[in-house]
Length: 327
Ligand SMILES: NC(=O)c1ccc[n+]([C@@H]2O[C@H](COP(=O)([O-])OP(=O)(O)OC[C@H]3O[C@@H](n4cnc5c(N)ncnc54)[C@H](OP(=O)(O)O)[C@@H]3O)[C@@H](O)[C@H]2O)c1
Image (cartoon, rainbow, N blue to C red; front, side):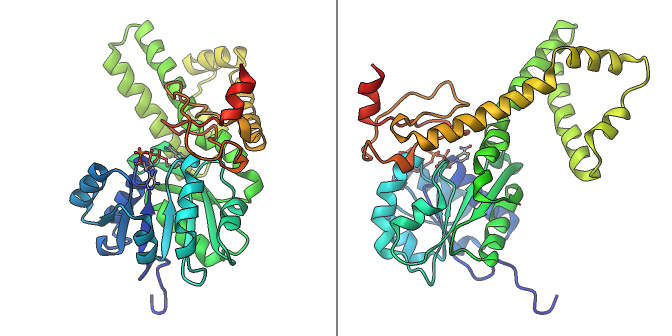
């Protein structure tokens, strides 16, 4: 179309932190062809990770965050939340407000927090992605900071659209997003686990039950998104009066499944709010029972940079004070 410009055209995109999420975004951008590899870069403290990404994707890599910022128009902040203060302090003097767009995916770090660490009216967009971004089927929500423009929103929508679906929300809804889609993959895996066990219980080989359960969830979700129909309409298509599905649905209603799910999401949203307001008790990912508490070098009272109840899979942070208070 004459005159139509892709939001990312000519932009150099750098990922500061190239772990699971940063790597997924870079891969999505390369695969979709939205940004040529020559316009993509990553910085990380892990040289092995950088070597892997550079040989797999053909992008530029470096261990100096400052060089990455100097080379990029769009900087995606993709380190863990406890590492954000140190990283912002390091790169702040090199951020040019007229040039750079900062995109933070750090869970629980508000746009105002990032803005305060940079002098001048920097454009910041905050995004809450989820783990299915790793397979190109993520669900991400973003909100604009004080100085970000609708055009910045389009840039972010294009980047996260390369690894799934994207919606825009007000920042006040970010905790709700965390409770629904951020933590959501864990709920879906719990349900899938239950369906697989249910299949095994009624005699199906485990692998058969696994494929049937997962493909049924995938296919049902696609039908919902692609048809635009209300879920009740799609449910009715499977439910013959007096039939097998009606019997199964009754058992689920009897067990209060819908109420339990609503309670679960509300509990996660409440927890997200608590973690944001209680910075001394920074907690690990609510959805990860492998996470070990780990003290970081960040200031123990930096209330703005707590780990949030999202889908993070490794690091947790607890300030020194919180340790002693808990005992
Ligand atoms: N994973 C998810 O599902 C998910 C969902 C929503 C939001 N998020 C957010 O996405 C962000 C990244 O998560 P992730 O799962 O991708 O984490 P990750 O796999 O740990 O990636 C972070 C990378 O940054 C590196 N790093 C640490 N300090 C650094 C520094 N000073 N400079 C440059 N690189 C540094 C880490 O190296 P080391 O491993 O050596 O520390 C690691 O390679 C987090 O803020 C998280 O809240 C993640």
